[in-house]
Image (tube, rainbow, N blue to C red):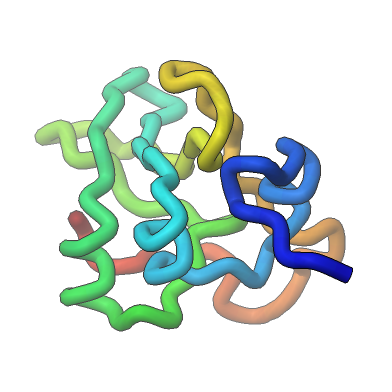
Length: 111
């Protein structure tokens, strides 16, 4: 079995790989943004800042954070473009199907 570059792997491989960390995402060239489901605010996520604030083993799949807009009570979900995919097309980083574990909604540090 040979090694396949991340940009040569399929979309389903990236979106079903829930154990990928932010350090791996940064190394492979993911583009990540956060989207508020209440006010529709979009913010770019700097993976270097996330690594510095919460550590290289942080995972964004299935996570949310509070909205950055003043006074908005909404939650932001993480959307990403995996390596090798068209920039500007974002997919939600959903958690694994059995996401009923404790700490599922814990916030990573605000980027």
